[in-house]
Length: 141
Image 1 (cartoon, rainbow, N blue to C red):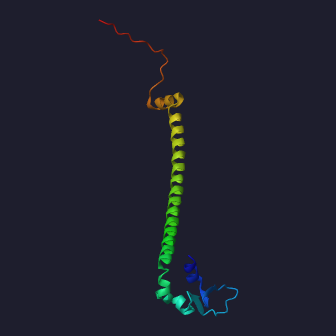
Image 2 (cartoon, rainbow, N blue to C red):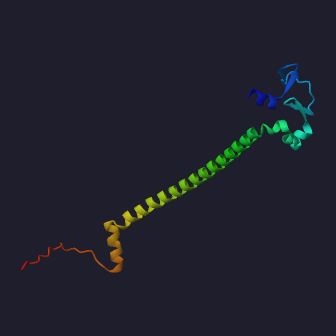
Image 3 (cartoon, rainbow, N blue to C red):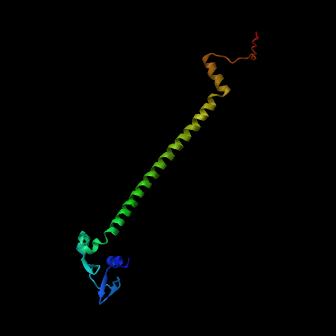
């Protein structure tokens, strides 16, 4: 792990010991970046030429994993936004259907009221019966 960190952030070899270079005591110019004991020019960093060097190729699994995780994060975010949009759309549709259900229920209750039925029958020429209903008896033989 220490070797990977040294390759990423750089180190200077002093005799047999390795001394990490920190940003506070870094006397290098902005044009050069040191990785694993070798300097990379800023132009090479921007153009991506530093990625084909042998000492950077040992870090390729780390770069691939970082790119893979980034792609997964973006895809997950896209999937969640689509689901959220779909949930909002379905919630609006449910609200519309609920309002329609209440309206139809109210219309049905009004249409089946006795006074409403009698008013419709009067328009058709049928009068409400004033006689009491009679019971029809069938003799069993």
